[in-house]
Length: 269
Image (cartoon, rainbow, N blue to C red; front, side):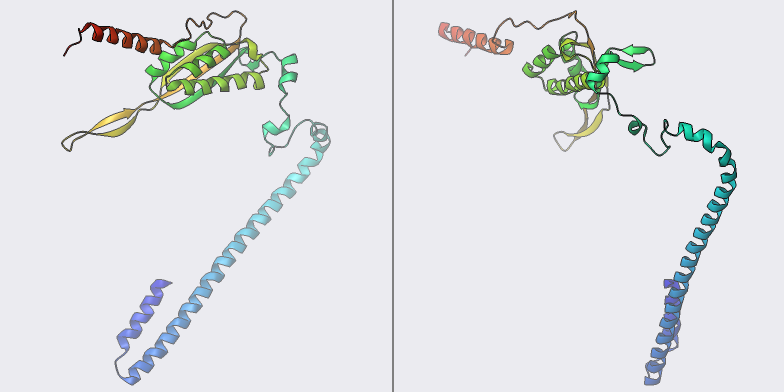
């Protein structure tokens, strides 16, 4: 449409002059060109509307024909399908809406765990993907909580100065929620059965160096997976040996040794 308009006005400007007769003819040609453009716009709108109407009519007629052809075969199976329609839901209904999930009290009475391909499972798991931190740092802390009761593991997470401890605590709480709410397990008997970490994506970032140089640094990501299970036999337990933290005790002893050395005059000058 724009191409035709530009051609029409190009022809008009090529045939006009600067005389009054030329200006009047130029105005007449512009009016005629604009009228032709308006007619072309109306024709395009009518064509698009008629195309949509034709597609709608063809689709409606085809669906009506298919429904009429299928109605003859459906009459025989109507009675047999009516008996099973009450027990099965339609295809548009989500499988999660067909039957409500049993609550924790109902599930614990007749389902002791989760039903899997291998049978009933007494374990519940939680996985966190893409957690900030390297697998080495996560693995060093996961060795501390393996085999502990979930309450003792949460205490270790709260008392640890490591940054990954808060992330592990969130995964443990998620695993506890899955075990109690989804599988009806007893929270007081839950034990950390498995705590693993896997290598995730290593994000490459720019590291600025001196003298206008730059390098590459990596921001590691890890996948943390924790499984809990019901077990009355606890392999490990938390024992508090001293109220003072180990790092606090080391600093205090270091200050004492420094004061003794300073008093004896054996510090290097």
